[in-house]
Length: 458
Image (tube, rainbow, N blue to C red; front, side, top):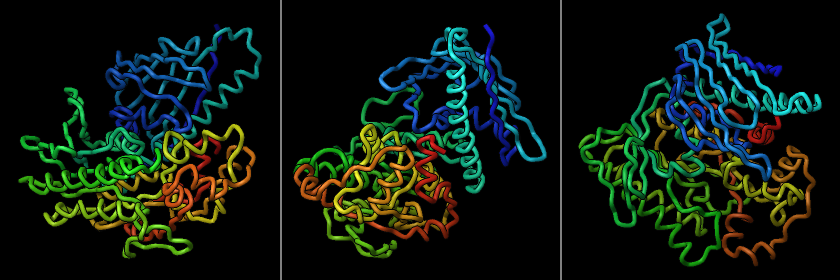
């Protein structure tokens, strides 16, 4: 069977050894999976040493299959190779080569593959496969370059970190970014911890969290909280939204404030909803809270972190915008309607959205961990807010779908009640100069390039 060959190569601003080391750390595979792809890691044994194995779940439309891969060769600092043992290809061998050059480290991804029934397939199928591979590796190399530059700007100092909400949209993207940067990550879980997985039990509702006897943590990243955008805002839902934030943040802040050796930094999630519905006004961190229910949630959320701040721990209140990722959140829900097109807007569509791509979101978190100048509230959003109508028009253009009439205000309020008024019809436009002036460099500051990269449409 004649094998086909695909090669993709790029230079990176580091040494070949540094690039190899990045790939050898936990989280490297997760970090490189394209966000528009539904591929996910089911199990992994080892990293890139010979004999290490990984099982992936791949999905194309309604069809899903598993991919079993095994690492068969590893020359530290120079190359490693993995092969498919079971999966969609007849054969597959992927060699990663690292070479020092005057232009920086050269990474060459070389794949030799054969398709099932290859001799009977039209040439167009192979062209589709190669276009798909180029799309994937263009994203992989761009993400890798951004990660390398981010860690270089942050000084490369390894930290021992504790995270809540590690399984959510933000946490699942943040953890591999941290581990590939050489940080040691522990997570808080609400079930029995699995030995060897760096897990610690906590129960915010019961006030249970014991960090005594553990090695000190350098930083804590608190992301946990009930999803505001899911479900109707019943009285019980509202109570969960508040309690999940106030109880968890209070427990974290008081626990680390009482430690004999305290973390140097606490990053605690909040939201731009702090400012309420702002209309055309552009809000800076010193502006007061709005009068909406979400504003009240954010106010209580941020106040709950005060015990850490009062104990001398640098506390950053991350007022996060709408995070864009096809793996979850608002963008995933919008894409679910893409088969028929996108609504031109929610209501008039003039409400502002302070958005941020998932890679910039987690990049800003890593930056805030290391930047001693950052403290107090910080707006974390892209520097170019857009209207709801502008977002929908751009998304339709990127994915080549028609625009449908806007959804009427009355219908949204009938279906979603108060949530429609505050989340779908309300808007917030924020300045990000505090984040930018601290030295953060955005990967995708503009909406259309960000969407194209996230959706593989570059």
